[in-house]
Length: 257
Ligand SMILES: NC(=O)c1ccc[n+]([C@@H]2O[C@H](COP(=O)([O-])OP(=O)(O)OC[C@H]3O[C@@H](n4cnc5c(N)ncnc54)[C@H](OP(=O)(O)O)[C@@H]3O)[C@@H](O)[C@H]2O)c1
Image 1: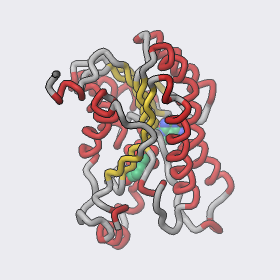
Image 2: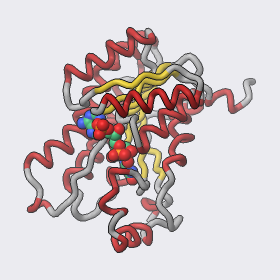
Image 3: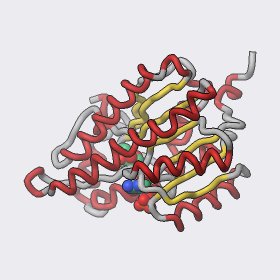
Image 4: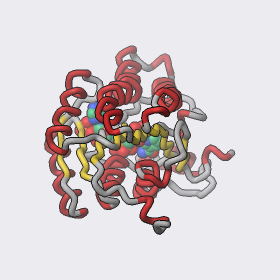
């Protein structure tokens, strides 16, 4: 029987990581490349997507490309899948990571705030899953990893659009896991707790909010983005072959309370 670590290798696979230009997506893209995959990363900013792809290729030795894609646009998402198929001939792994947060009491939020968060965090993954499905189904193998959140399970005040989008994403994950179980495509949600990235700049810059958040984390610290890479490789590989429709929390124990 193969060494257990061999089951984590994804050599020959092609992965797409939306929002891979920075933060958690960048760490996940590098981890997948280090585990053997060719990686296409996307962001709205083509310059940062291309820069990050070049850095990942040089650090991992795997081919990587950076593409400008607005995940809320059906035509741009469909174009992304065509470009990746032209580049590499296959799509095996899709990481729906691009996401935003707009916080505030419901009365202070606008309809466009709601639309922006729901469209990016929920409609975007739906469009990407739908567009990537034919390539995965044709090979009877696929892995979808949806970056949901601990706020898809529990909530905090001031998070109506975000928690609603992530709760929806967790249920999108379960629904597609059932729909695609017969097609060899496993669909799981990776649910981070608080990590120190750009999406949390407002919280990190407020010493009181930062400390309050930390006081609710049993491991008593914010997560380091590097701590997500191994879990992403697990969910992208044969190591997780009997896992679908699951939610994996990497949250320092936040949701254990
Ligand atoms: N950090 C945390 O504590 C935490 C906790 C739980 C869940 N998450 C989830 O993890 C994911 C990554 O978060 P992060 O902390 O790494 O955020 P981040 O540092 O702000 O990075 C977000 C990424 O998404 C891209 N993006 C944003 N809107 C987009 C759009 N409409 N179309 C295409 N790309 C878009 C950004 O690039 P451009 O701006 O150039 O488009 C960037 O690459 C998100 O889904 C987030 O909700 C994060």
